Length: 228
Ligand SMILES: Nc1ncnc2c1ncn2[C@@H]1O[C@H](COP(=O)(O)OP(=O)(O)O)[C@@H](O)[C@H]1O
Ligand SMILES: [Mg+2]
Image (cartoon, rainbow, N blue to C red):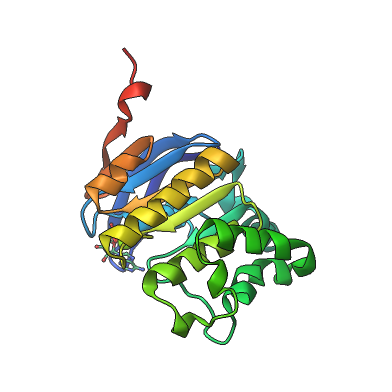
């Protein structure tokens, strides 16, 4: 579970307040979207709840532990084993093949051999098994984004944080990426926090945290989850 307590983020001098004291919870196994207009603070919030940045005031707890109080080693271990990141641009290494890119997190932990079958299985289920030995430069944007998702899932992380994962894709590939994330949530139980400014994709999540100017405007639930 991820919980934020009076989360405030400021940048610059004099400090400019970007997030204005946010309180919310993301339960394990949830699929939550963070939506809002460009500049509303979505990426800033995602970085805070995913250990990539620290708040100016307030705190973020991941599974009951304050991220700001974790040691460097503890944060690295958490990121390597429990968190998968997906960004708008794939950040695959150009000199590595698809399979090598997907296996990179496992290689860093010295368990590449054990994970090879899982990597091939993920590529197969994403329809890109035939791309296993291609390089990023030889594939389309939709294919490289699916490779990036396979890499994010290779360690079977508890959490996936995605920042505009469909932002660089056409509608068909965007929907494909959404379906993959939905399946990871439903079949593997992966907790997914996805930033998007696309209202249709935001509504795909079971819960939508809508930001307006760094404040939570509304938390919208799927109809079946709404209280009567
Ligand atoms: N590192 C930074 N330094 C200064 N200002 C920043 C920084 N990161 C984000 N901001 C500002 O915070 C606001 C929200 O940015 P961001 O979280 O990227 O919005 P979104 O992802 O919703 O488009 C913007 O006004 C942006 O310029
Ligand atoms: Mg952003």
